[in-house]
Length: 204
Image (cartoon, helix red, strand yellow):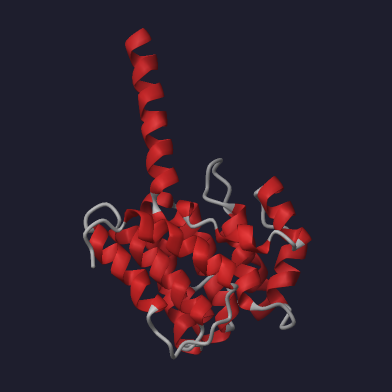
């Protein structure tokens, strides 16, 4: 009994360390957007709310602020499925049952990016879940720094356990791409690359 309890504790500690050090959890760029009241709500409740969806849907709100909310919601610790909430909204908005292929055609780039990022954050060990939707989003806005850096972080997460150098270069090539529209706060970019630069080791 004691041995089983100790094993459980070790596993929990190991999981926490891995989660804390991996790309999608370590790149806490929401801290660059702390001036937004909705960010504080996201970090407190960890649940996607109606006002957050309204925020996502408004063209007045830039895409970096939208993904900052998702970043602030964090990974799925308690079995919550925020992406389901947003998928339910999209079903009602477009009048179709949940279908990735239909959504890829009907949804805006921002909607696809948000739902894909939500999915990725909900399944830490299978962040690839959200990548198809994020890739579809990128096709609708190829020059956005925000779109590109989110996909790069998800790619890095997928590469994290077996090829760290590939993970690093996934994001570094975005940093070096001067053709992208910088629709992301510089302080947020610094947070992302402070992490990647600190762990890149011999990947130059």
